[in-house]
Length: 84
Image (cartoon, rainbow, N blue to C red; front, side):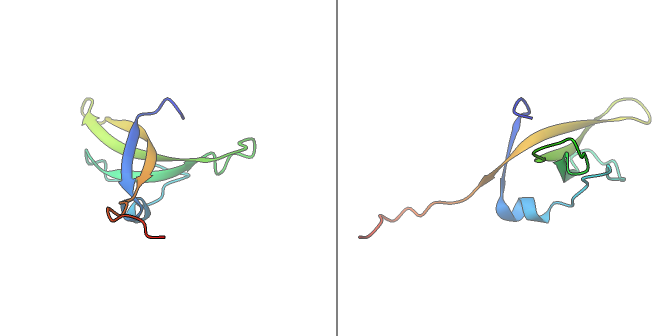
């Protein structure tokens, strides 16, 4: 999991992704994204981890690449100075 490329998302973007933790979405359009709690249904997995799947390039007539990412949730920090 740690070797996956990072994908930065806001909380809202992450929350709005559809979850497919035990399947893969139909509608294989390049660029389509979803979230997956990897290991959620594996009784031997001690710590499930979130992953982001994204359909990539078409590889032949009936195949499409799936790119996997490690999500990093970003948020805006206030630019004003903290007051005591």
